[in-house]
Every structure is written in structure tokens, then in C-alpha cells.
Length: 125
Image 1 (cartoon, rainbow, N blue to C red):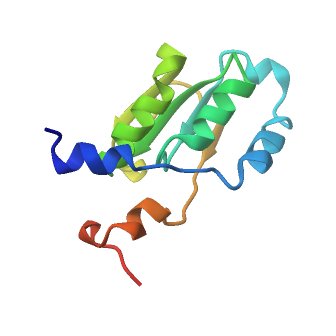
Image 2 (cartoon, rainbow, N blue to C red):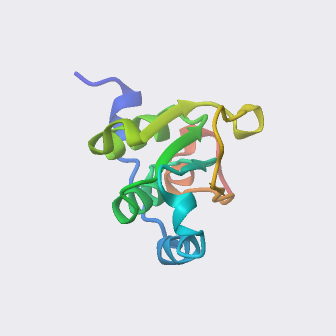
């Protein structure tokens, strides 16, 4: 039997509504920086934006940060196929100091529907 955490995390689906804009903005980064470049996804959520970036840019690595255990579990599952190019950390972006040069930071500062859909998570309106 699955615990409540696992059941809820399996329902953590996120469709990145700004995906096209994120990919378009990365095209402005000089190609020599993109080679082995690092992007910080400061608000990883379900990993939708990170997956789009990793699919589009084969030389980019991503460190995804989030504090929501359900989001971390969902993003880890979504990004596992990218191997060492994707690292998921349970961390607040305000406390994160990268150890390597960063070419970009993505911060989706909205609230996600999986957080609102489950009243037990403490978010409501």
C-alpha cells in the first residue's frame, strides 16, 4: 500500500505554460556559454520547464531547487532520464550558492495547481 505522500506526488502533474517563452529566451544566450552551461531552476515544481530545456539543449545541465516534497518526487521521476545533466535538490533558492558559473536562472514565482488542488497542503483561496 502506498503512503499518502506517494499517492499525492503521483498526481503532481505540471504543464509549463511559459515553456515556449523560456526556450525562446535561451536562444539569446551566446552558443559558447551554452556548451556545458548550468541553469538553476529556482522553483523546480514538477520539472516541466527543466525537462523542456534539457530536451532542447543537449549541452545544458540543470540544478532544480524546491522545498515541496511532492514536487521533488515528481520532478525527480520526470528528470531521471536526463541522468547527471539534471540534479534535484530539496533547498530554498534563497539559501543556494552554486559552485560553478551559471548561465541562467529560471524562477516561476507563481503557485501551482497541485498545491491548490489539495486543501491538506495548506494552500487555499
